[in-house]
Image (cartoon, rainbow, N blue to C red; front, side, top):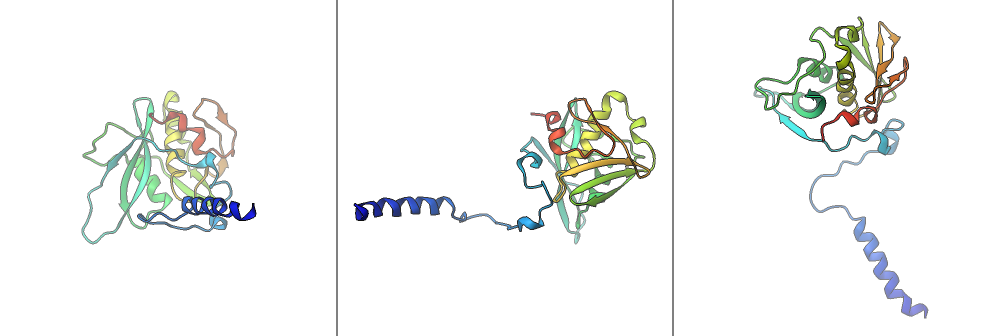
Length: 202
């Protein structure tokens, strides 16, 4: 009886090993789980697949570029746009590109609701990006657009490598911001991609 079970056991082992095999095509980048900040490898902070418009900025010969995911407002929703930015790309550069809006000409009517005068320092600690501005930028955005404007920032920053949460402050003092469902996150309370993903165009 023991000998008769061995072929079945071997067959099951082969199926298991085949399902775990490395694909024959494509590239694989292995990341040490210890290098992933707390919570970033959980399903709740993983950006889902969304409609994407690829926009390529004017390139300069001899300059290296990287593709970054940014979110812009189209009608009453947000869409993800992939833009090529000069390498190396950092959060401050991504944030500046978000404020600047889509490069021209752009194959989309999507826009940014963030004022061009809006400046902020993006500081990162433990996978949390803090958007610290010198003035109360929300006051310059229409009340009915504030939720979408904050969503632009949060969705964009949490789509960058290593960022899972975002906090906001003015002059170093934590402030509260509207979440995607309309409620307010308390001052200093981190918000995530999931707090605004319902605003992404389907």
